[in-house]
Amino acid sequence: MDIFKLSACEIAGKVSSGVLSATEVTTAHLARIEAVNPAVNAVVQDVSAEALAAAAEIDRRIAAGEDCGPMAGVPVTIKVNVDQTGFATTNGLKLMQNVVATQDSPVVANLRAAGAILVGRTNTPAMSLRWFTKNDLHGQTLNPRNRDITPGGSSGGAAASVASGMVPLAHGTDIAGSIRYPAYACGLHGLRPTVGRVPAWNSSGPDRFIGAQLMAVSGPIARTMADLDLGFRVMARPDIRDPWHVPMPYDSGAFEKRAALTLAPDGMPVAEPVREALIATARRLEAEGWVVEEVDCPPMRAAAEVNATLWMAETGFAAASVLSEEGEADSLFVFDQMSKDAGSADLPSVMEALRRRVGLMREWDAFLDRYPLLICPVSGELPFDQQSDVASPESFAGVYEAQLTQRGLPALGMPALSLATGAADNRPLGVQLVARRWREDLLLRVGALLEASGHVPDVSDPFGI
Image (cartoon, rainbow, N blue to C red; front, side, top):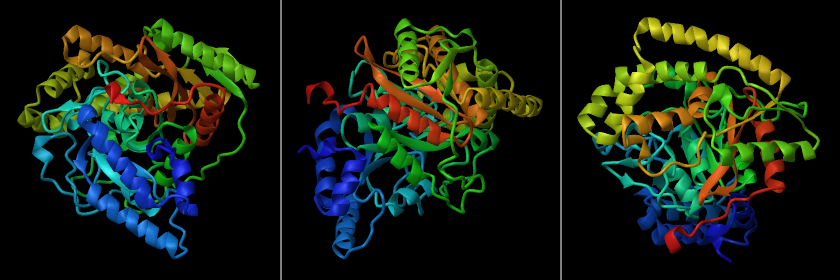
C-alpha cells in the first residue's frame, strides 16, 4: 500500500481504528516530500521534526483510548502567508523571512485541534499577487502534472503538494482565485468558502484593510470531494479572534435542482475545451434530474472592477512600498499592470466601489435564488504557460481577461467550487460551481455527485520521478 496515495478520509479512518499509526502515515508523507519536492518546490519550509512529534502524540492519545478528532493523523500543508507558531509568515517576501509567528492563525489552530499533522509550509508568489508561483525568496514552484504550465497562484505550492502526493489536503487562500485557480491548474478540487465562514487572523502583522476583510478567505484543496468536505468543516470551526466569523450551520436545507449554465460570462473569451467541459457538466447534471438552463449570469465584469478597486486600494496604500523595497521584478510588473486596470484608488473611488458592491450582491442573490447553482468557467483558457503573465503587457492582458470569474466572484462574498473534470492538450481542465452565501453544502453535494459519475484526480509522479 502506497500510504501517500490514500485520501484524507481513508487516513483518518485507518489511524483512528489503529490500522495505521499516525507516525507511519507522517513518515510516509515526509518521505514523499523528500522524494519529489526537490523537483517541484512546493514545500518551502521544513516542519518535519514538529510533524513527527505531533504524530507521536496522536499515537499516544489513540493508545490511551482518546478521540483525536476527524482528521486524526492526516498530513496537511499550510501556505506561508498564514501564521504557524515558530515559523516565518513570509508571504513570499525576503523582507518577511524573519517574521516568526508566536501563535497559530485560527485556521491552523482548527486543523491541529482536529488531529491534522502539519508536514510543511507551501510556496506563494511575492505578496500572493499572481496566478503563478515564483519569488526571489523561495524560488519557483512547478506543476507536477506538466512542468511547462503554471501550478496556479497564489496557492500554487499548496495545489502542487496535493497533486504530487505530498499530502492529501492543503490549506490555501483566495482573494482573486488563489484557491480555485491552483486547483484547476493542478487537476484538483478547491473550495473558496463564503466570506466569514473560515476564521482568519495573523497576529504577526497588522489587521488587513477593507478589501481583504470583505474578499479574502482560507479554504481547502484536495483530490477528492469527501476530503474537501472534511477540510472545510474543520477549517470553519469558530474562533473568537475573528470578528467577521459567522457560526452558520453546515447544512442550510433543501434546494431546488435548477442550475444556470453561463458559458462566457459578460462575453469573456472561452477556449473550446473549456466550453465542452461546461456543457458536459450540464448534461451530467441533467442526467441526475437537474433542470439546467443556458442563461447570462449577472454582471461579472462590474464585480471584477469592484475587486480591482478594493484590492488595489489596499495593496497600493499598504504594500506598494513593500513591493518596491522587495524589488521582485515579476511582482512589480504585475502590480503595475493591475494598477493600470484598477485606475485611481482614492477615497471617492473606494466609497463608490463599496456602494456598487451592495447592488451587485443584491442582483446576484436574486439570480441564485432562482438558480441555486451556477455553472461557469474557472478560467477562460487552459492553464497558462509558465511566466506568461510577465512576458509582455499584452500577454498579461490576455491572462487577466481569462481570469474574469476569478476576480469577480470574491467581491460578492459567495462560495465557489473549482471541480476537476479531466484534461485537454496535456493540461488539467475543470469547471466552476457557484452558489449563494453559506451554501457550501450545496456545492459539495453537487461536486460529489459529479465526481461519482466522472473524473477523480489521482496522484501525479512529477516528471517521471
